Length: 390
Image 1 (cartoon, rainbow, N blue to C red):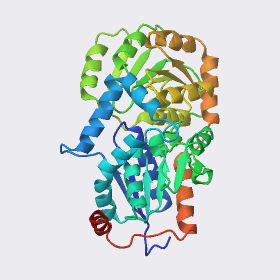
Image 2: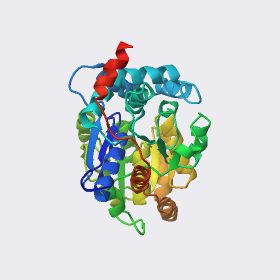
Image 3: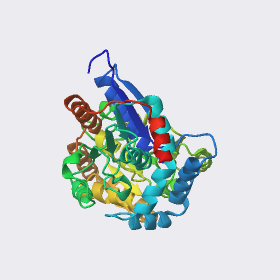
């Protein structure tokens, strides 16, 4: 791209969990390296300080996952598959449509990149109505697909595994629009990756519940505290300040040396220094650990997509899944007394070496350079007003 006409890239994520945000940051980080002159804007589409339908949607979604996981499981299963969940999918997209139109009108991007389906759906409605004509790129940040992502207006999908291609084609998405790229993770996880895993002393276990600090961390810590072979526990409470205070109080009465952090930016360093990662199986955390080469034990998976994540990683030999929190102590103990098993799990992680950010950014740049894709012309808000008058 000519330096006289820097490319305008709009990356849109949503802070429902931190995985979507971290994937977007990985794309932004790598794109800046490849095209320093590009004008890249990254927006958290649900970031608002005002009481709005968008904020209510975000808070309800998070609360449902944390407090009513079986309800979330039911909604997930009912809406998964061809033509299912269409009403809910359309309703969510229409709720967010006006905000998306204003954002696009403000940025005037050459390409739209999404790491969450809700804002992606809003852009697809605008495109279907002829109000925008900008390439739409969708990055799926799980190891299974979902109906919420399925739109004919998406130009290209980027997915984690080959198995997801068949899932999506069965929902009517043409195979030519699906690229198997891997999930994008930030450069620090490549820079700090383990090259030769060895279980040594002290035995340090890193415990994570995702960026929102969910996943029965208190219960997990109490069970890990009973494992004599663990020398130190490091736990991340994420952005959940009340959980942080609760874990800090709990740690003062534990037998095992325990360090509690809130949200941190040096997760790769903490993974590098750990013997084992015990975590809720969010796809981004899983892919970060795979990139690092650290063995994993999963607990308290969110029904639906995290179940699928845990099954895949266990099948690939990168992790073990404690399907019941009461079995967590047994699963972790069995691994810590078997260093060769841990080393094999690390090898299996490193064998699955994929640079999702590099693959995605490289493909998008190549498509934009090769094709005569439409650029921003006119005023999208005017188009919206015209459409509403018809």
